[in-house]
Image (cartoon, rainbow, N blue to C red; front, top):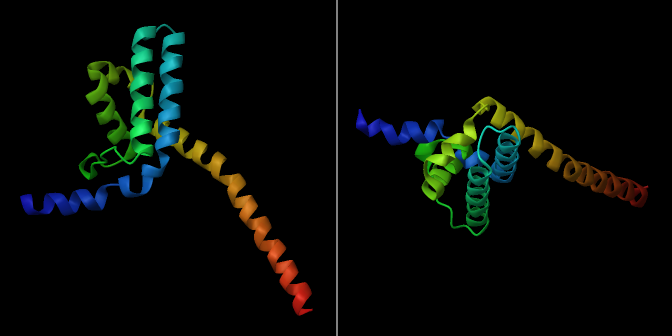
Length: 138
């Protein structure tokens, strides 16, 4: 049965697809940590540790130094594991008052918000080129 572990992990892992959500996931986590502090749920020093750790992970990802692990399945678990490595048990406080569903819903909303203007721009370029082509072909 051990032989099937790796193929099954690769099949169920979404990290090859959702790794592009790293910026949104990190920004959402930073905002959440700040909210937890503002509400008196975690200490300001803990929030600073979380934010510093997340920013460090973001830089590693952008430099191509962050090791994504398929066995961790998705972007959330990869970033969480990286945060635990950097700051220890304080990383676990980041999930206070937030579910995985909340996390992915926010990530996707932020992603769509960022990508929509790009799609509109591409659409405009396409239609402009079509009009020019139609004018030339007349």
